[in-house]
Image 1 (cartoon, rainbow, N blue to C red):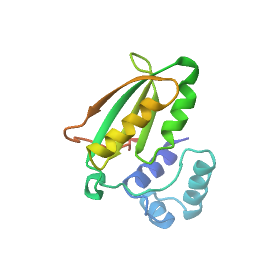
Image 2 (image 1 turned 60 degrees about the horizontal axis):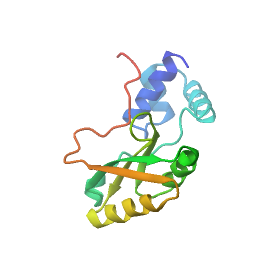
Image 3 (image 1 turned 180 degrees about the vertical axis):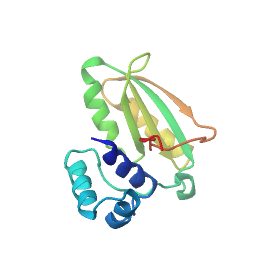
Image 4 (image 1 turned 90 degrees about the vertical axis):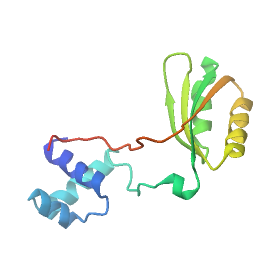
Length: 149
């Protein structure tokens, strides 16, 4: 991973629809260089895919929650995998602190959220949950700045 890789990734984060030719022109390198580097980064799992950045609220998912889950130690990995399969879940983190797992999920309404939380509590090994509802989404962007320019 060098500076050129980071610059390619930065451009793709800004606009994943850029062609190899457009990226090559911007970075003043050969199209083949861009193609080979992107292909390598896909094979290495650095680039996991290309997806649009959606406004979930405009799609009807206006309720964002952060849910802490306390689980029995021997069941944590199994519980995390099961939670990650839910269509409403966008992030699952194995964490330190009072809770073992943090889940970020999107819901259409409180009833949708309620069903999910009750399902969570029904999972074998889940001891308790703590649900926080986002009052306002100030920033929601998984793209990190990779270069200094």
